Length: 216
Ligand code: SIN
Ligand code: FE2
Image: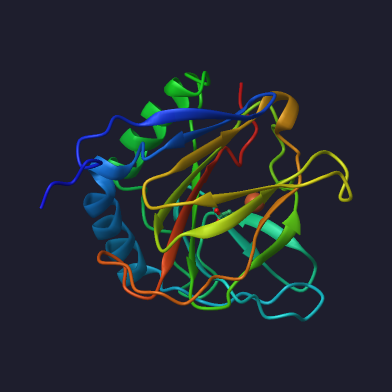
């Protein structure tokens, strides 16, 4: 069958000042990224973290890199060790680092050096309520966010929680990069619709690359 999109070049959609969607940017590397997720999860398994308020998150999470994002009774933190295993988070696979670097360059953040990669896994109904990524001390670094598997509706607002929201479908291979003026913009993911994706089955995965330590 003729697939008109099989060889399509990725394209860019401006989202906000400092923010852009790189449509299908990760598509050629999707299989390798999914293998990387499996390898990370074999060491540090997906788990449902509990917020300081006692709420069990619907999104399952794990991390790779020098630092990983986690919750505890007092709040959110980045730490070198996985609290579940007591061992360091697994290193960031080379495929992750390369993809992230190329996306950052394409979005105009060539200096971005992530030291943390949060891996989110969404099943039917899982969501991420509107929030800011603000646990990182150095806000000069952007966020690079890679979508794999089932599509999901991404909300992207402004600096205030009640600023108007854009709603965009993120699909397999899409990469969103935000930094600069939009680094602290509110965003979230609406509840995942049921479905089956040829490469991820009933799931959506998201890789969120961040600089979690203060840079030079
Ligand atoms: C996040 O906001 O940390 C994740 C967004 C996504 O899953 O696309
Ligand atoms: Fe976020």
